[in-house]
Image (cartoon, rainbow, N blue to C red; front, top):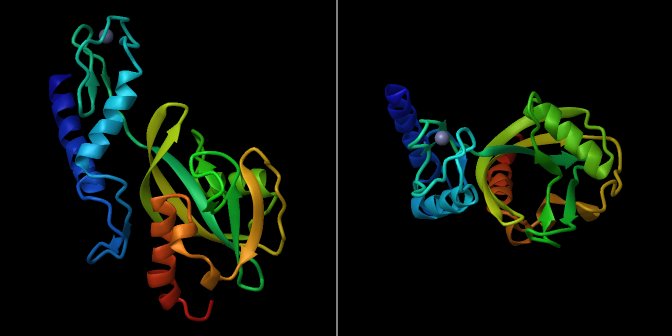
Length: 228
Ligand SMILES: [Zn+2]
């Protein structure tokens, strides 16, 4: 168990170093053309994890009180040895194009970032692929069936919900449809509209990960696909 946790901790440290080791900046990683969405430095991530861990006052396995919560994952129970990791939740969203080349933007109906723009999407369920999730979420939110779904990029994010800030990894897809869509989930979507790519500005978008995906689409994907 000890060897496992040390190895796991090492890889987790590597992962956190890779995912959150830099302050927020909107640039592209050299060599791999993958956008980096840093929603905070390592200290910020530790605060998020500490907040999250502070919600849990007792070990979920043996019920012993947890006195000293770690600033970094994994959580390890001193009494029974249970090790719990705080990996990110995963979400999927789509930049959806209609036959005129316009992109579907939705205005968020609730916080965080109520009233700001987003692309349709949501959390990926267990036993669901990211592609299945993005099709389901788009269907649920705006009543659209997607014809083709193509991977674009991924980007770390943070999502505050009911007092807990979740670490999230967002997967972004490009998708195409012939349909116009409608607000099918008023609790999530206030309104929707089809926008020319030129009319969407990063400041309108609700989250850093959306801005990074948008930047990646505009600066990397689009120049490589001039015919689309
Ligand atoms: Zn325990």
